[in-house]
Image 1: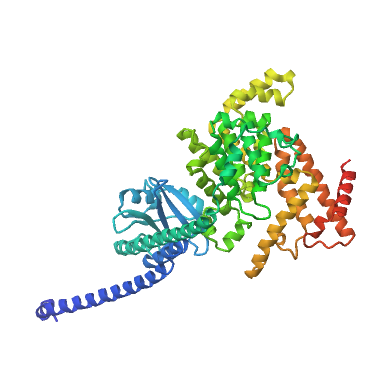
Image 2: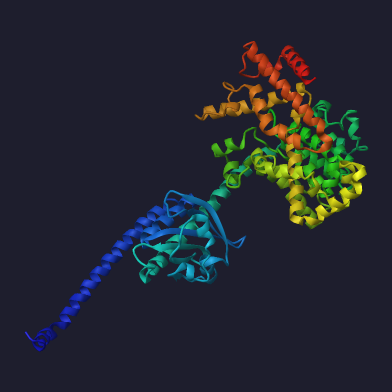
Length: 617
C-alpha cells in the first residue's frame, strides 16, 4: 500500500486514535496517581506513628523521602530560630540506614540548605560541586560525596519556615527530575503537618511535666513558711564572728558539722556572709539575707546525705577557699559571691537518688531536664532561682542588670559542675589550667600579689614582667575560661571535702552516703532492675568502693587544688590509708563486708587508724 493510500485510510480514524491514546494516558496517569497516593498513605502512616519522638519522626521522614524520589540520602534540617541556625538532629553517614551522626548545625546563610531557608524556594542542583552555594564541609565530615541535590523548604500552614529537606544523589539518573520536584512539594506538606504536630506534642508534654512538678513542689512548698521566731533570732543583735562558733572554724581540718545542727548552720552561714565581706560590699539587708538562708535550709529534704548539713559543710569549705590569697587574687568579688551562694544551694530539693535513676525511672524531673543532661543539678538551680525570685529572699536586689545576669550565669555553671560526669569532661582542661599556675585566672591588678606569693623574691622583677606579658598575651575569652575552670574546681573540691576531714568524721559521712545509695538500690530491685554494685547492699564492699572513688575522682581533685589547701590533700591521702587498712583487716579476719554495721565498730576503727598511722610515718 502506498503512502497516499495509508494516509487516506488512517485520516478518517485519527479522532478515534487520539481518543484512545487520551484514554490510555488518563489510565496510566490514574495508575500513577493511585500508586503515588498509596505511597503517600503508607508514608503518612509511618510518619504520623512517630509523633511522640522527634528523632524517630525525622528518621521516618528521611526514609520515606528517599523512597519516593529514589535518592541515596536525605537530611532534614529543623529551624532553630533562637540561634538562627539549621539543625539536623539525625544525619545519615555514608548513605547507610544504620549509621547516624547526631546534630549537625549550619548558619541560615550557609550552603544550599541555607539558601533555600533564606529564599523559601526549592532548588534542583544538577552539579553540586559546581554550584557557588554548595558547602563541602558536611561531605568532609560525613565521608559522603554529593553529586546532585534536590532541596526544598518545609513550611507550616501560616507559611512560616519549619525546616529544610535535602535529598542527595538521584539513583539511576544524572539528576532529579521535574516529576521529583512535584513529589517533593507534595511531600513537604506532609512533613510540615507531622513536624508541627510533633512540636506541639512536645510542648504539651513539657507543660504536663511542669504541671506535675509544680503540684509536687506546691505540696512541699506548703511547709516552707518561715517562723517569725526564726527570723527574729537571725536579725536581733550583731552578727557573731565566724570563729565564735569554734576557735578553729577557719581551719581546713575543722569539721563544720561539729558546731551543732540545722539552725546553728544557718547562723554560721550568716556570719560567713559577713566575714567574707559580702554583706557590706553588696549591701545585703539583714532580714533579706536571713529569709534567704532560712528558705534554702527548708528547701533541703531529710535524706541521709544530700541534706542541709551537707550543704553547710560544702559552704564552709568554700568559705575557707575564698579566704585564701590565691582565690582573692584570681576571682573577682562577683564570682566569689556566686560561688558561695551556689555552694549553699547546690543540692536543694535533692531526692536522695542519682541522675541515672531519675532518667531510668522517667520521673517528672527527668522528663523535664533529661534532654539537657544533669537532671538533678538543673533542678537545684531552678529551685535556687525560685527562692531568689521571692522578693523577701532576693539577696541580689542591689546588683545592676549586668551584674544580676552575670551572677546567675556563674551560679548555674557552678551548680552544674557538681555533676561528676561534667567534672570528668573538664579534667584535662583543669590540669592545663593548674599547670599554668593559675596565671590565666589572675587579673593584672593582682599579678604582683600573686607573684610575691608564688615565687622567690630574688627573681621578682623578671617573674613579674613575665607574668604581666603572659596575662596580656592571652585573649579575654581564654582568661574567662580559666576562671570558670577554677570556680568549677573549687566547687567540686568543696563538694568532696568530707573526704579530707578526720577519718572518724569521714567514715560517718561515708555511712550516710551508702545509706542513700542502698535505698536507691532497693528501689531499683523493686522495679525489677539490677542496681550498680555501689547501690546494692548485697554486693557493695564500702572500703573497696571508697578506694576506687578516691583514686579516680577525689585524690586528683585535691592534688590540683590551691597551694594554701595542701594539707587537705595530705589528709585525703591519710584517709585513703585508713580505708586501705580497713579493707585489709576485714580480709585478714574474714570479717563480713556487706552492709554498714562494721563502720560503727569503734574497736575496729582504732585498729584501722593505728595501722594507717604506722604507715604514714
